[in-house]
Length: 220
Image (cartoon, rainbow, N blue to C red; front, side, top):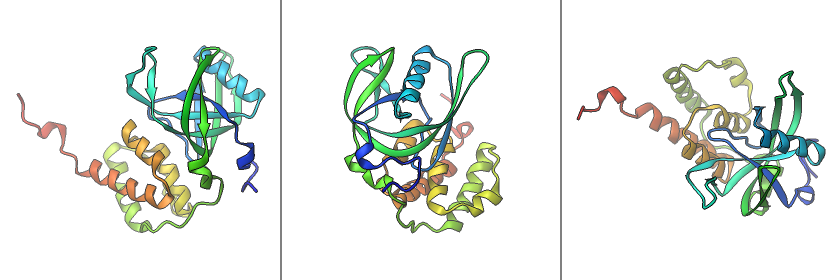
């Protein structure tokens, strides 16, 4: 049994997925990701997904390119289900994805209408379809780090809502919204359990808080 109406059963997960390579944009299980879709190929991808299972794979592109000149992709992404969409007067689609489960790219397929597709191996991440396990990271310590991190980046937060959010969902949501570099975002995606992700989050925030100020570097 899937745990809510947005989660398919393991048997219903598709063998292939359209993928949206977008640096710094990710979705994780039970989180929401709003997207403003305007490129023709991704408009086509979104419309095709709406006609079928509504699933789109969010993946992080690498800095290097493949033989075809397209960005290489990290091996692990997350499938999100389109749970809302709106068409604008100028032809854009405003959609919201709800994170369902992660997948490993087993193979990339030929493009369709300009967008990329992959064969998805769901096996390593079927636990994403179940409620998250326990998280041993100390909540108050994480929130103290988070306040300093948000202050550092000039970010605003609804701390009352944060205080009421269950720790597993909070960790996943922070991984989505915090402005970590692509490789650090990918580390959060690939963390096997929610506990692993929370510990990785603490480490990344600590590194950001203790990074030397660019102005302190000697001039050459």
